[in-house]
Image (cartoon, rainbow, N blue to C red; front, side):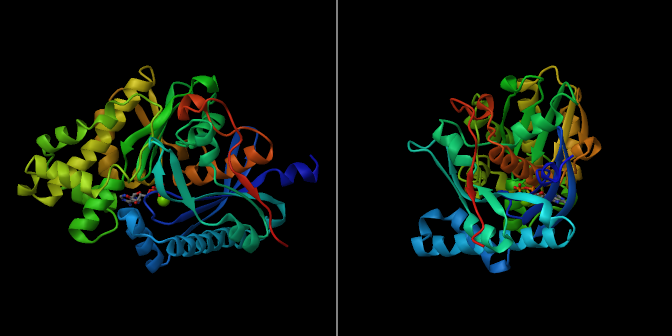
Length: 379
Ligand SMILES: Nc1ncnc2c1ncn2[C@@H]1O[C@H](COP(=O)(O)OP(=O)(O)O)[C@@H](O)[C@H]1O
Ligand SMILES: [Mg+2]
C-alpha cells in the first residue's frame, strides 16, 4: 500500500447535534466498508455561548445580523478547539489526516418552508485556518438544492458501513431527534427519516422543571406514571403519520409544543415526573411505530446516539419492540457515541473522492449529489 493510500484513510468528523450537549470530534480510519474510531474528544461549548445558542434557537426573531456573525465565528472556534484536541491527542496521526468533515451547529432547519432552508453555523474557514487541514462543510444545502430535506444524512454512512454486514436490521440514532435507516442490500431502497423527538423534549422538560441538562439514565422518568391523555394528544400530531421523506427539528417539537399538549389535557394537575415518563413513552412508541412501518421484516435494531445511555428509555423501547433484538452499534465495531461524528468524517471523504453523500430515497432529492463545500487552509 502506498503512503498516498494511507493519507486517504484518516479523517476527522465534527458534529454537534440539536441537543447542543457538546461537539463530538472523532478521528476515524476508514477501510473497505469499515470505520475505526482512532481517537475521540468531546468539547463542551463555553457556558455563555451555549446560553446564546439556546436563546437563538428558542427565539430566532431576536437575533441580529451582527450577533449571527459573531456566533458563527465563536462556534467555529469551539469546533476548531475540538478538532485540535483530537488531533493533539493522536500526535502520530495529523500528518496522515486528509481532511475534516464539519457538520456545524444547526440553528434553523426548515425544509418544508415555502422557501426551504437549513442553517448550520461554525465558519469552516476558521476551522481550516486553525487546523491547517482541508475542511469540508455545509453538507445539507446541496441536497436541499436538489429538492431534498437535507436530512437525515447519516443513512448513507449507515448503509455503507453496515448495509451488507448486518441484514434485516434498522439503525436507530437517538440524538435530540431520532432517525432510522433500514439496511437493505441496494442503497436505492434504503428508507431513512426522522421518527420525531428523541431526547429533545426529555431535556427541555427536565431543564424547565429542575434546571438539569438531562435526565441521567432516565431515573426521573422511571419514577413517574405515563399520562395516557397526554400521550395520545402528542401521538396525534400529524408529523407521526406523515409519509417519508421527512425530517424535523426544534422549530416544531419544542417546549411550547409540549406545553400546548399539557394544557389541552390538563396534565399540569399531575406531577412533572409523570410528564417525563410520558415523554419517554412518546419517544419509544414513535420509534417502534416508525420501525415497524418502514421495515416490517426487520429483526434487529442497531442503536446509537446519546439516548442509549437513558436506560429507562431503552427499556421502554425494548418493551415496545418485542420482535426486535436491540444492540448498540458498539457491538458491531463502532461506538454508539461516535457514529454521527464518524458519518461526517465519511461524508468529507465521499466529497473529496468525488462521490455522492445523499440517498434520494431518504431525503427526497431528485438525484445523488456530492455534499458540502471544500475549504482549504490558508497556510
Ligand atoms: N447518561 C445519560 N442519561 C440519559 N440521557 C443521556 C445520557 N447521556 C446522554 N444522554 C442524552 O443524549 C443527549 C445527547 O445525545 P446526542 O446523540 O449527542 O444528541 P445530538 O446529536 O442532538 O447532540 C443528551 O442531551 C441527553 O438527552
Ligand atoms: Mg450531541
